[in-house]
Length: 430
Image (cartoon, rainbow, N blue to C red):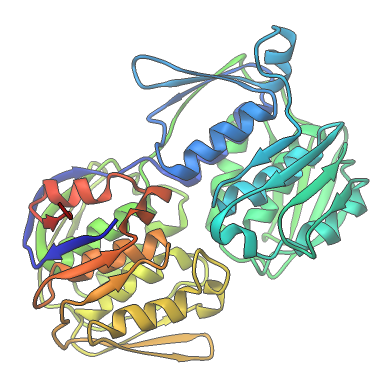
């Protein structure tokens, strides 16, 4: 799909989408829960749909209720109740990096052989982590030279192990969930070079709700105790998504006067850090527990460390483009294994609009302040690139078109509809 965005001023109130980070974690925990989970405000992105499909293939029963909630019976309960939730031999993760990294250790905890596959860019992402770690835990694994598809034969035997957390914290999330369910006595995971610690905070926060007991020492040693028995029914409401909302907030700072609701300002989500960048850029912003108001103003260059929140690079580049001077974002090394090589993609796609981006070691240097020019852009099949281009287009001179604009369906399928509801001029092909 090709979409064109005309320069626009946006105004109004919008509610942030459901967090796919929280939604996918709730699906995994519901699968492992020996009871019923009621999920309110469920996500509807492609990644969320992949997680729901995976837990069904692993034995959970999923019922979508008329009121929009989802009821999930954990795999053990569904099996005992003779539900149509028998385990399949293949799970498909779509293009979800979180799903492949989280559900692989969980699948390895089952006493059978399960093949794990995906599509698109996920097929090229490195999965060497599992080749190294799972055999240490009694799991047989076959991979495609460290890439998908994977085939694991469990059950996983929790044991003290040391893992590298430098590529992604999502591997650790999967290990913690698998250990939390299978550990019969206290066991430790030692982690070196852990990145994206806030995402581990989110994992631990949600695991505690589901009766898991995990402590850590400075994010270096995690101690997993046998799970306590939580209530038979877990009632969980998926919080608003700071990752998707970051694009809305930047759009307001560039070309609007908007209010964003549905965000928890005390959330453990890493991308809540967008507020720090907006404040550093002198954006006109008002933050309350109920809503965030943000409007167009004179923006100043900023220096921001995105090592623990690399998904913020695309909206931060759009923001920096409108800051009068040179902005610097740290953490470029975290961008190589996303849906695209995001550092290079941002440099090339925003370069078409006239923005100069320099890459220097772990730094991205953006020379903002000059007018952006409408252009022919391409999402590179990356949802966050598509959204960043759309946001930057709001203040450009002339229309900007985006090829493969439907890439947003991976995380925020209503993004264009939400922009249009705020007054953005979007033109779809006839």
